[in-house]
Image 1 (cartoon, rainbow, N blue to C red):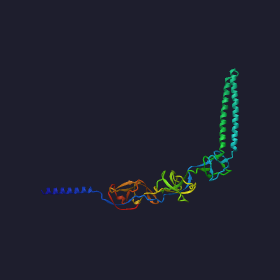
Image 2: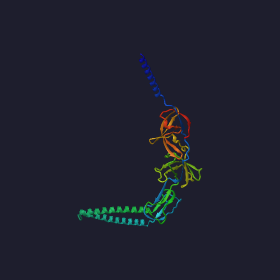
Image 3: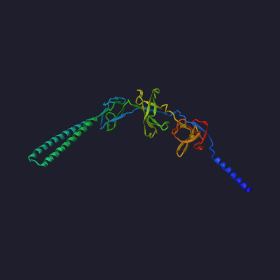
Image 4: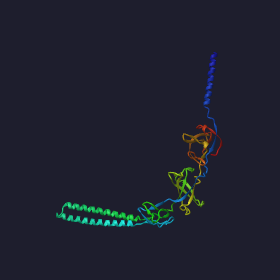
Length: 358
């Protein structure tokens, strides 16, 4: 009887131990105190770029044939009209080529007339059997060859006349001369730049921007452009073109900013300063202690303000002189954990000890 009582007591004690273990296993994670910060956009001092005013449309003009430059009536800064002659080479050789082509055409036309008359005579004679069919066929072949020679001579004459027109370079549009690359007396090659003409009515700012720029460059990003000598004179602009590759030496990317109705003071070559608009001139930064790096990816613990729980969020970061800036993955106003990130678990409840500035 006593043995049976001891057995019952042992079983009851084991049940109590098992229940205590189950309660301990089901116990929730403890609420962990953490340091946190709310991401707020801050103005950046590195959103400034310096460049110059340049034309959008600029053409380097040159000759299509080899020759010695005998005239260049324009210089840098001169205004030129559409169709105006801006350079000329010695056309003596080209003129002689035209005369030679005309002589060849006259010769070919005379041979064609003679061959046509001979063919006509053969046709008359063959009616009376005064000649053979073979003689008529030969006359037809001679006439056809003479016609081909005339066509070739006419084409050569047209080519020579066209090349004679290449002795002068004319402006394709009204503009201003921005550069000259050859002087009178110099022998210029086909395609060699002689005069560069730009359209002054369509101007834009050209700046070089490095990899530390706090905002991702994209087409249409707004800028405020001002003259360096007259900072109060400002115009609005947007990125029109971004160089696909950075310069090998400076590691800077060339950016072209189209200007909206620039005044006359924005002359070609003027030094300008381009700054991001106030709406874009802000960045989100996170402290280094808040970033969790795993397998080459970066993440931060984001706090749910309603449930007071944390969840791990992937974030894109870039390093610059001001620290780590957010380039994607986190919105402004998000609360992140700034200390104790390695001891947190997904969905764990936390309480805020204090806010730290990122």
